[in-house]
Every structure is written in C-alpha cells, then in structure tokens.
Amino acid sequence: MILKNLDKHRELGILMLRVGIGLMFMFHGWPKIFGGAETWFKLGMAMKVLGIGFMPVFWGFMSASTEFLGGLLLAIGLLTRPVAMALVFNMVVAVLLKFNTGAGLGGASQAIEVGIVFLSLVFIGPGKYSVDELYSK
Image 1 (cartoon, rainbow, N blue to C red):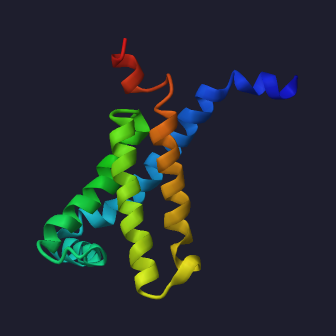
Image 2: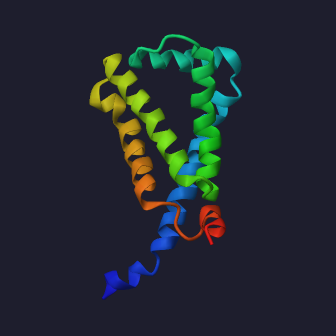
Image 3: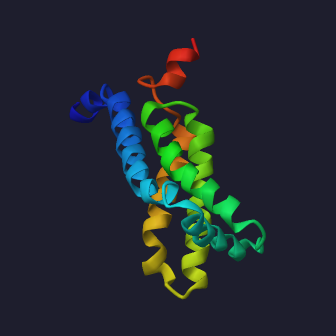
C-alpha cells in the first residue's frame, strides 16, 4: 500500500532527476564551455582513445557544449532522449580515457554512474513535466 502511494509521485521523481542532473552538468560544463580554445583542445584530445586525433578543438567544444547546453536542455526537458544519448557518449569517452590513463574503475566510477543515469533517461524519457511532453500533444 505504501509503495503504491509512491507511484503517484513517479513524474515528480523524473522531474527531480532531470533537473538535478541537468543543473549539475551545467555547473560541470560551465568552465569547459567558457574556457576557450586551450580548454577545448585539452578536452578534444580525449578522442584519441577512439582513434580520433584530428580537430581536437572542435571535439572539445562539442564535449563542453554537450555538458553545458545538454544539462540545460535536460533540466527543462527539451530533446531529452537525444541529449541524454549525447551525454552517454560523452561519458563513454570519459570512461575510456580514465581506463586508458590507468585510473581504473575507481577513477572511472563517477563517469560510469552518470552514464547509467543518462542511459536510463534515454529509456524512461522526460516525464510529463517537460517541454517535450508539452509539445507532444
């Protein structure tokens, strides 16, 4: 009975998850997006773990944009599934980089955990308290 009563708050839970993780990724991406070409170059070099060594500034900018703007879009629930998938990709690269640099599971755990959250949002969707839901009707 108690658990059944909690089901009525499912949509609120999805909203809290989206807004919370979205705002934290905006915070996390802020210094990267505004760090400029030097920061983007360093970020973009992570793509070498996928065998992509060209245009590191572009890839770094894309990563920073995905974190900052993706966090914003996630928080408001706009383009939730594609944004969550882009963030999953960002976390996959982060995990591979951590393993490649010898940080192991301990060093990669945060990126793995957040990647699982983003992948879950791909399947769960934005919930009814979202811009996506507002425009799907």
